[in-house]
Length: 478
Length: 130
Image (cartoon, rainbow over all chains, first blue to last red; front, side, top):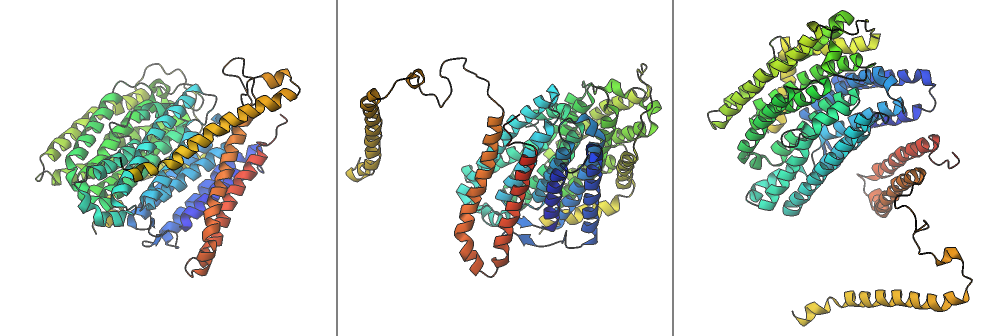
């Protein structure tokens, strides 16, 4: 709980600091927030009571276990990288950059609560804290029409999914009388044939499917990704999606494990279609953020492989893949943020000649694309390998898993085309209109090197991170 | 339908009678009392919550109204939380497990709200002059 309280307090302080900071010092508020979050992250590894491995609060609504700690560190790193990006982006934000920082921190606190949610009430409150903050973050560039459009689309579809979620929770509570995940798990077996209970669980999955942008609830993702300010897009792609996954894991494997066991085919179909949809729709895209929007749908599909496998190895592969995805996506969006900072378009053509303008940015983008595509030395490859392995392990029981693995492989092959299209745009495009070098500030270089180091570390030395992921996933094995 | 079941709807019937009586009564009284008062143009207009009933159907009005409405909802919710807190306060104070928690949790909640109030104040949300 200490961690969440600290993060909340940081958000409030950032919000109020706006009034006493002179305009030219506002950048430092962002760096101060980065420093504070880095301190909290450091403390979480030191085990200073911030992230103890066991315990509950609020009558079991809030649980602190391996999975929660894993995701809390994940969200802290994500928020730090996004804040670095936000500081660079601050000259594009007209109204109140301090609010932008504090909203990122508030969204982070929602994610931290989501990581520990062990009760449907906590699940709903944490999801709403994340989503409502993102409504504002998405439409933060009030002067840009696309940003407002993205905000309105996210608001309407987000409200719709929230209503599904809360309706589902109501149906589950109405039939079983339980909201706590552990208490629900104890009685869920009796309600397996109760249609109203099953519809309730299905509605909850709809609400969470919206958060992770899985088919058929992915409609909002490309438009919102394209229109939102770039740091928001990055946080949406990493933080919000991961929060959706941690809640999905908890609901499926802690609250209703007996129901989940019957729904393997449903999960296989959703996962397969999400992979194909994301990858096929990404093919014709010329807008970078839109391309990454579709790619993030495809990645939601890959991550769902780990859910569909219904095994501890699948869950730990999912966690490992998310860790790699964090560094990769943050790297890609940081580059996009820096390159398109002074341009009005974020087309692929904006990347032309990037290797001459800034070799570091070009290299980072290339590595990010290679990692997203899943080529050996980087994080993306090992994650995909583990996910496919976990799916194939289950193949003997249900031949559907072989089809799913084949679909995923096909999706990976398709994705090579558009990821390498980005790399081609950097190095081999003819008309480079603008060849002026891009100057990078010190802190953003640090952020870029963190991302690169993360991608290589997870790809080359996976054992440490995999141990953490396996330890985190072991909460479902009990 | 049984007699007893119908009887359950008696209060609803009474409510309908009272509602009709109230509407008819006020209209009748206003006819008698209204004639003795002075008539002005504004008084003869149809009542539309203070706005002019005739004109374009989407009149422009200050964004401040939205701001005040939102702030009202925010600070109104505070009271919604305060009431149940006040009701259980004595019991939770007596309980050893929650004794130290009950006041602190409300104070921290009020602190966050106060930070929001300070923010609204500094952003001149209550300033009607400009």
